[in-house]
Image (cartoon, rainbow, N blue to C red):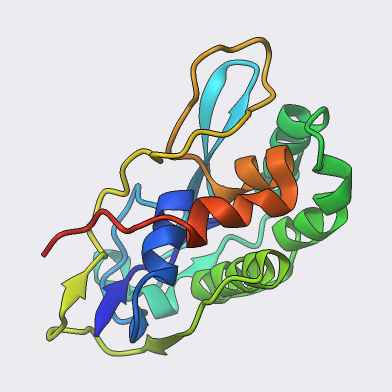
Amino acid sequence: MTVFGTSYFPSVEYLKEFCATENVIIDAGEHYPKQTFRNRCSILNGNGQLDLSIPVIRPNGNKSSIGTVKVSPEINWKRDHWRTISAGYSSAPYFEHYEKEIKDLVFQETDLLIDFNRNCLAYIQQTLDLPVRYGVSQNYIEEFDKDFRSFHFEKSDKPYHQVHFGQTDFVPNLSILDALFCIGPMARTLIVNSSPHFQI
């Protein structure tokens, strides 16, 4: 069994490990850790790398499990996220191709964070035809073969063309949204044709 935390529009590295592993379980029983990929993704804009964070409500404070954490009902953050995504990628080659679906996902009316993220993952899975099969555990997982819950997903070893403001250096470890808008269907090759880096 390999355990992952849920992720908001996950990074290429997260998806590489996710797709390369069998018997994957997303742990909804772990206590919610702040400032992680569970409610955060990284994109590019005119100022460089930028983190987008979903504001959440923890019903039991620090002891709230992931499965109980709620997405803030305020619409302002969704508006701000979409404006930032749109401003950053409107000139990307595939932005118009995926624009409507990504916007709908950002504005989805979903109560729980884990469901919000699962809808995002399902779209990425379908769009890029990824071999994603996983289960969700409502109880904290104590026995496992590999544990990616606290893993730091490192930079991608396979650069691609990023279209942003004349930059010359590849910016790694971004959300799959960056690759999707920049190289479209070819984003799949960053995920399924690469070997995982994780070592036990």
